[in-house]
Image (cartoon, rainbow, N blue to C red; front, side):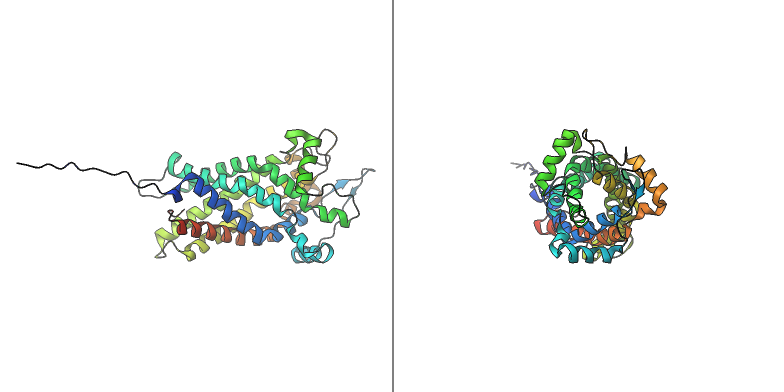
Length: 323
């Protein structure tokens, strides 16, 4: 008698660490760690970008009262004049932003890479596909998270307003949110969203695309394994490229978001992001678009390093595959 056996193929075990929700949560945790550590540099960058901003006074003359103190001088000035704790002013809405932004951008990019655009047969992911994924995921994530970014920028500028003797506009993230809703309605929550989305698209083109491509090239063309050193090298490249590509849009975004609005919620200083771009170049020169570049880069480098190291390490600890 011949006994036949039927081979049974068990479906691969479900790995929760590679699940959508787990990747989302890990992204948020890693981004929050990076945000808290590097936030004082973000505050300094925002203050520098507002310095030199030309605004018309009641007589139609152009005024500019804020001193140019540089990155270190601005940071020291904030600590001395407002208190060390104020270097973290606005960090709460910044973390709220990452609850949405960082989770969406990573999950969206990973899904585009693995399911929509798909890797080549040899496992590589062409840079043009990576660029499309980076730009798209950054734009989508930032548009959804834009209200939290608006609240963060307005909170960051309150210390400077009070030192100049101006009345405070907002007292807390909740008050800022309510004020924006009162003055501009739901639509007002997306003030400055266009330059914000443009910046995020460029930053993610620099960050996500560069990190993914650099890591892939290092693993393919060197003997280095998927280790901390590889992550450090790739994230260093990502931070520099992201800062170079994103700073001009970041300057425009900050100024559009920080400007006062009329009773209908329209900006008083700038009609649009293009108007802000042109006025900034006309009044302060082209390189004003790179105002705050040093703190942007100095912040992006450790931010990118902290985020990617945390992200990869948490994933590895949970048993997920590498990014």
